[in-house]
Image (cartoon, rainbow, N blue to C red; front, side, top):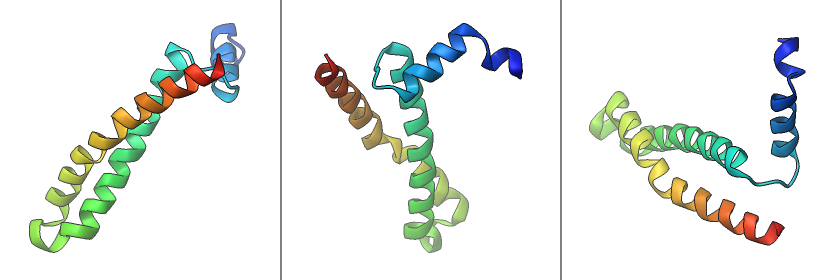
Length: 87
């Protein structure tokens, strides 16, 4: 584990994630993180809204599918705006 943390490429990636740098790799990482969080939120929302009508599993699956539908374009737009403002 110590070799991974002390690797220069990983160290540079961690520094650019915590700093105000928005490049291709940090953008992809933030997009993946945002997608997973929106899938979890969509699944929870699907459970709260339609658990009695559709059942627990189907409502969670549908919520997980439809959760990222509005989040992914918003993340991409936000990262593009941050990239423009940072220059």
